Length: 523
Ligand SMILES: [Cu+2]
Image (cartoon, rainbow, N blue to C red):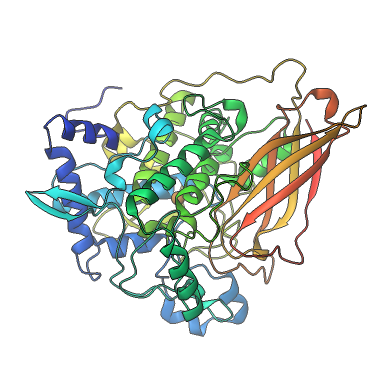
């Protein structure tokens, strides 16, 4: 399939930077101009960044109706349109980026949304492209605040429902933050703690350095050198590579379906949503797991780390453009560019799974290729996009991707001889116990005949969640976290005698009293 002349090509944002350095300033300037434009549009304009960024989480839809909801509904209510932990995750976000691109094009005709190539050599070595992090940019001869670095809210975000913690509220004029900064400012106490925390990180250039180091560490997992992603070490790089091998759309698409698939089948599959979660947490304030306590920055609390505010940070769309590219690569490498199916009735195909129903979709609704991807209009007659409308990005949406990393289907990694090919299943962790996102890390401890103890780090599993705790009032929702860890780092003969343990890194200071989990080794 060769792109037609009208096909819009989405390029790596680093290529635009290179052009800029080589004197072709226009592509990058056009991008910045378009972003500046949508951010300056009033919040009454549907093309404004406030409206578009607000579709994902807050401001919640139907907020005025919330007071009329029953107590049960208030607790299960999620007022954002985004889909996570279900089969609409890749397609909903595909149309989301497409709609943002349309808005950019209304400011600068023909501009396309570039992707942050998260698994490129440059990102492994240097972190985030500078255009997404530097403070200023020279546009048309004038120094301006770089519009890709943050967003200043033109309206307050204060959708927290009765019983929730006001600590998460964001006032008008709040500017989004990333690791290592904190953005908790909803109460006087939180604001004081945040000011004290942020006071330790006053130098923007230093902060960018810390952020980039954190991103690189997440990409590599626990591998020591940046040039060696060490795919057996479970970093984000490894996870992206793994997801390209997922055998069908259902398990490729989301964490709920993949978690169940791994219970039902030998081996492990990694869904696209999993490394996607990691990048959210890495930018949003979580240290890379598995690095011990060194470098730990407690209380970092950025906006990308929870679904409520993630899309208010412009980097969200560069991240999701890359997630969409990975989706397309999976389609190309596995023969699904024109068509794929959803396994009906499987875990992850109910609107109540994981995050819960979105506005306009009733609890327990089966999700499929024809489910409306609210609120995205396909035409002026009020038709809403469905997943079926966005399977083939070239033929149906008119764009494609310039080549980037992971263009070639990765080779299947096999465990070294003598190493285990089994897996550890951790389950029974209730998401509702936690305020916000969290990360599980799994460890195995083995004592040999001489009573020497070896501890293996098995990997991490990040859960991208929402800030107000989810209450499972009527248990329509699957709130259990199911995580799988290949045991390929362990000698096969040590697996049965090992002791397994899970650590949780979360936003609170203490583990919830009711916290518990089970572990099991299987094929
Ligand atoms: Cu996301």
